[in-house]
Amino acid sequence: MEGGIYTGIGNGTELDSKVVQTFQKSFVQVQDILDQNRLLINEINQNHESKIPDNLSRNVGLIRELNNNIRRVVDLYADLSSNFSRSMEASSEGESAGTLKSDGKSSEKRIRSG
Image 1: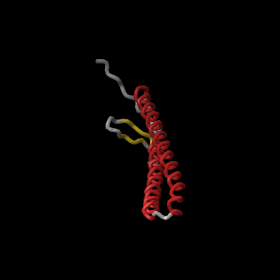
Image 2 (image 1 turned 180 degrees about the vertical axis):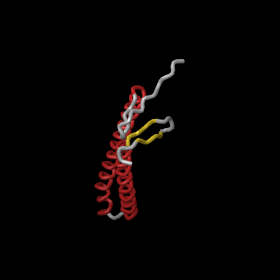
Image 3 (image 1 turned 30 degrees about the horizontal axis):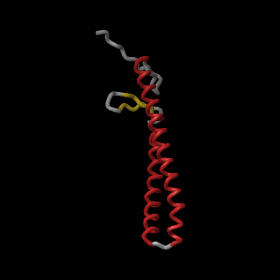
Image 4 (image 1 turned 45 degrees about the vertical axis):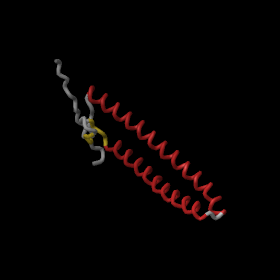
């Protein structure tokens, strides 16, 4: 599938497999951070419920880590959005001027005058 073209997004838009791989990598990173956040939240809750002073003071660092992780997720989603917009713009420009698929063949489309 490497170097192939994917058709999707409901309107026949073609996405290069490198773009899809980039999206998948970003989504995996986001999911890993969210999984880590779930563990942090569980530990924070346990520390809070224990009411042990050392555990409560440990929560300060855990909450900072959680906040940093949330910032990272926001940044990853912002990058994903930006990359998606750029790939859609490039795709729509390619549709109007003809695109070159990974096999080197042109996929020009004729525009009917109406």
